[in-house]
Image 1 (cartoon, rainbow, N blue to C red):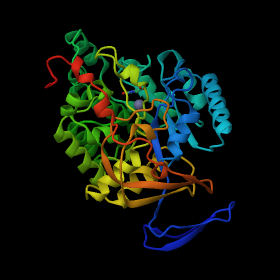
Image 2: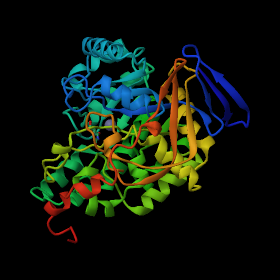
Image 3: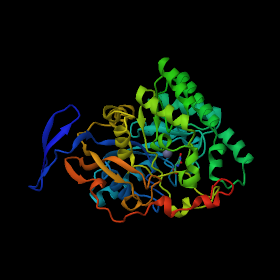
Image 4: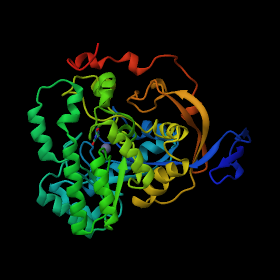
Length: 431
Ligand code: DOR
Ligand code: ZN
């Protein structure tokens, strides 16, 4: 197969040739970018296969320009021993083989006080040690100072990157008690307040300093954490920061229309945090964008606040949301490539590859739940019209049609219209 006259970011125009069909395609409207790495997904194997598995997850990834994912350990059972890690890898490999998609992947190893002695055994086969400093989906948590000290020390000695979910568990517990029984989804941002994130980020940075560990702070959501990271970087601490598309694009006002659909941990914050996050992406304070793709079924997400699980899907909307932001002048294409490919490759020590995504920067299309290939089958971005879509993904020299080419199946049905969670949010909804 030949895709003719494809533009590259350095201005070169080239024909791309791939083994297989003798077909020729005009690529003159396409721009080739390095395929993306999503450094933060929850593909739910083992234990949550009804929400996602590596067959649906891989399809969602490769049809969206993502050819590498790094998967989190909060499975059932959690990935906290060498034996479970090996079993998980075997399951993943079998699932990828069954769909013929050689998605590239790395795995995080879960820190669990009962299994700290397992950490050195997996140091070379995982991308990082994941520490949940506050409880989220699944029971994993390391919440005492002495256990945190130990985990950072072992990781530093094993030369393993430490990745943290930075929310302070003691403060979360206090707030949970304070707001118990409240059914308004907006409460979520108060139950898990910004102070919890700031406190934990501060603590993680000081532990990284003390033990000489490399630190990767996941899903940063507040402007104060950005200040802490800026300072730590200036002091020479090896600290890296990730934010998510949802923390960049949603604010607390969106609970009114989306309710528990946008309930996630850490929660969405204020408009001024959004602006600070965009600025930090541009100025280098933040290093990566991870989707925290955390699928739950729509039935689960429609439960009232207090029963609905936290987490939203995101891998399929990552690239169009970023290209749309580039079209609006919020970020450059060069910076997108650094954030979604060059930096995660370096920080997570992933092997380099030649994968590409060919995008059409002019294409405008509505985000539709019916196009979603994740098993969860919904997206909180439904109804948004975005400019800039992936058309082909090149994975290991194989050309895969991206979602941008999937024919529109249903017109005018957006999740926003079909879902009325806010009715349950008594006292918050306007109508
Ligand atoms: O919102 C979230 N969902 N945050 C997490 O930390 C975990 C994730 C999940 O696994 O559902
Ligand atoms: Zn996560």
